Image 1 (cartoon, rainbow, N blue to C red):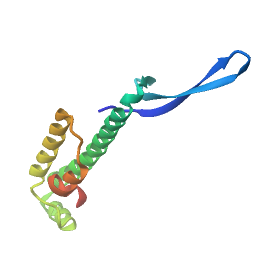
Image 2: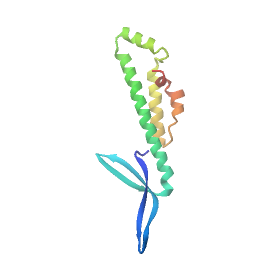
Image 3: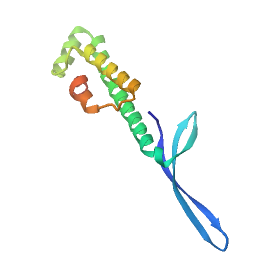
Image 4: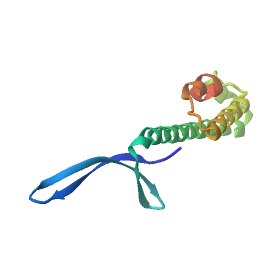
Length: 136
């Protein structure tokens, strides 16, 4: 998993008695850290791997944001009065009250995928592992 963006660089190389020649493209991974931009050149043969690593990071960020939204809504329901809870559950009539189990499965799935270096299949999470996220 890597964060950042990939940019192409072209360098102008001066030539004696002729116009400069463009060399490249060279690929650079750029990211912000501590208020500074950090850039690192990527070998052409590593480009696809780095693109996949960035995609994994972006997927992780998206899933984390969805997890926060679901957790906030669950917390709101759990901490509300019984009357308010009933009203909220009626409003979200498809909400599965076994959210704890679903969130545990979701968390375990994400952690297992990251540890194994496997891509995270969003469709699997949405369809089977954490269906409550689409219903809240």
